[in-house]
Amino acid sequence: MVNFEQRIDSYRDLINDRLKNVMTRKTPVSFYEPVHYILEGEGKRIRPILVILACKAVGGNQNDSLDAALAIEILHNFTLVHDDIMDRDDLRRGRQTVHKKWDEATAILVGDGLVALAYHYLLKSKTDRIREISDIFTTGIIDLCEGQALDKEFESSFDIDLDQYMNMVELKTARLLMIASEIGAMIGGGDEQQQKVLRDFSRELGCAFQIQDDILDMEPTSRKTFGSDIKQKKKTYLFIHANNNASASIKKQIMDIYQKDIIEPEDIIAIRRLFEQSGSLDFARQVVDEGINNAVDMLQQLSPSEARQDLTSLLNWILERKS
Image (cartoon, rainbow, N blue to C red; front, side, top):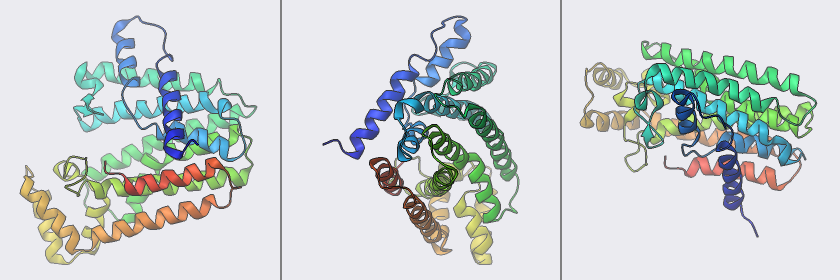
């Protein structure tokens, strides 16, 4: 009997196989080579899998959702290419980023091309609701850009509260998951209530995912680079909670480290201790658990099915992941 992991692997293989064939043109090489390079990179393919599972969860045929799933994954890769430029990251999924392997001009062009390619596949979707789906897709791209802009604004500000941070996370991280689920539900023939359930489920999923990512950055045993967010002086959920709730002494110690020109390994260890002392780590873990529980409750509004159970299993994966 096929289990959850095997089904997810089969969806991932399906997406990967289709990604290999999305672009048949080869010239100009300066454009198509980096396009193929970014699409061939390893990835968990969570977003296109959400499209498929949402479609199935409302009783639809997964084959009808594959073009939209591909569009969502291509769009996700566009965001990675441009995020890497803005964050000056040299590596992505264990390989050189596009702007590092080639140059920034090439990376910008590749990102632009990926957006067009995403629309190309979205518009091939087997549905009579393509205009409505296109509107959700387009609005989602604008929201993603707003989230990225807020994230950049936060880099130069220490006056941020948790509501502001969560608004940014919903736009930058959760929104693409939300549109993936909603579009999948629409292609599957879901009604407005089912669309809302899956959209809200993915919002909880995306927000929990980001907070969990912030927590993992502070775990020496995770497969992430320990303290990479701190080295970049990012305003994570943990930092913002501590900055708004910790004692004056703890806040001063955190700020003293964040204001250093170079943050050393011992500074990261000190920051983690301060996050523990302020209760920020425990608070963040609690918020992740609450988000997961909320998302599970939302799924109970859908009819029981294998796809609904698989969506629940994805939530459990978030709690258990180490990177």
